[in-house]
Image 1 (cartoon, helix red, strand yellow):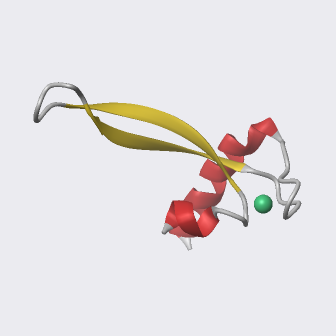
Image 2 (cartoon, protein in one colour):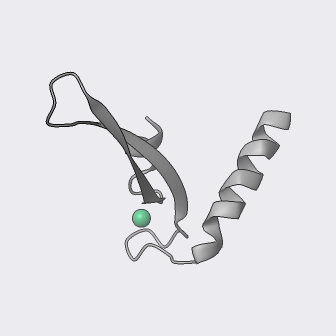
Length: 64
Ligand SMILES: [Zn+2]
């Protein structure tokens, strides 16, 4: 139960943008994801942050 509350407060904080999806009508939840990207040097990587809008259409793809 505590876990569930944690998750709710996080998503509420991120959902301030208030846009809704034209497809499913859900308000987007914005989730920050970090991708590891290979740089030009062999064996070297850097991290790129993305903020991804999540709704019913893509939540399965984002959350796995
Ligand atoms: Zn949608």
